Image (cartoon, rainbow, N blue to C red; front, side, top):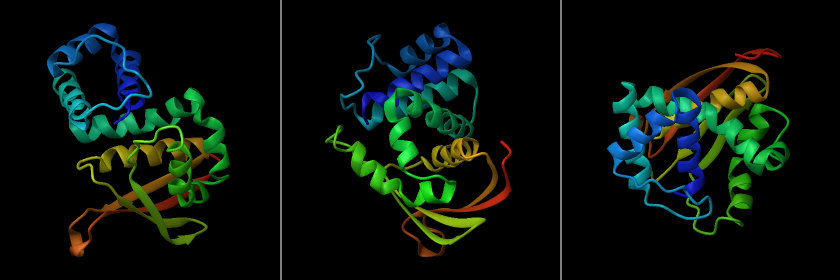
Length: 187
């Protein structure tokens, strides 16, 4: 993963728990005390190690931590120069989700080694959709659920998400079934 992801993880922990906690997490994961370079690739295992160390240090379930990080990521990415690109991806939650792969293709112009997940929307109605999530990185479905919550905040909608995990009914990917509960209010 690119350093941008690890920097987001660091900023998330520091903002919520302080620099001292981050240093303990970093040490527990065996990561040297150097700033992450945004445009540099790091082994996925380093990011997984940081997440695991954070969960242990904070006493949090991995799914809870990843979901909270996903919510944080939406604002983080927007604040780090991707807000304009996010604005171009759509004016509503479902329009945005239908353009995720195109947005990732644009991001890949700056990050040539980017290996993003792939997303496909089906069964789109004004108040529901199914998001198909394909990734070679295991265990990140809770992060995607968090991303959806962050996007719901961005688009001022309240949503309910249920999932059909990879392997259920023979599926080779995860499915997230999204239903808009109300418009114009932040969850």
